[in-house]
Picture (cartoon, rainbow, N blue to C red):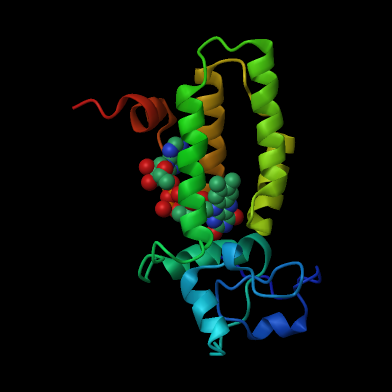
Length: 184
Ligand code: FAD
């Protein structure tokens, strides 16, 4: 995947070109823990330099995943990196879908729509959040029923999977994965 080294947004100055692959800076110009893989963050904070250029924006987050996949998992008592945060968040979101009513009231639909809007603005990995907000502008969240929201969320998760080069999940199985358990 191409790595953009010319991003001029805050936290993406020339100096970011010396960052390890998978390292994403925060908008405050400091290393963004929740946007980066643990490996990249550790490498950066130990002051080690990589010959490779820095990754920024969505490409950086994708690179973070690629880097992290070959490294040990984040210890349970450390701040979350981009992968731990993502895994935990998908668990929460799909679990919300699994327990969402099959016939939600207008108030429940409004709550879920509001929650998803606020969620997309507050998500702690800012590059992930900006891409997710773009996705939500293109694909309006569907909250009319459990099935509708579960499928929308599965498709949204698949859009991130595609961006990161991960396998596409078969959305006809989202309830087995997140509500009923696998048929065997
Ligand atoms: P995850 O993608 O975390 O999935 C967890 C489990 O969900 C899988 O094991 C599988 O059983 C199941 N699953 C997979 N796909 C689906 C699906 N479509 N529907 C239902 N269930 C499914 N990381 C980045 O590096 N860059 C980003 O830009 C980025 N954006 C993100 C945006 C959001 C809103 C969230 C919540 C996370 C984002 N992440 C991003 C994190 C990324 O999606 C993964 O969570 C992380 O890379 C860990 O991946 P994983 O392979 O453990 O599985």
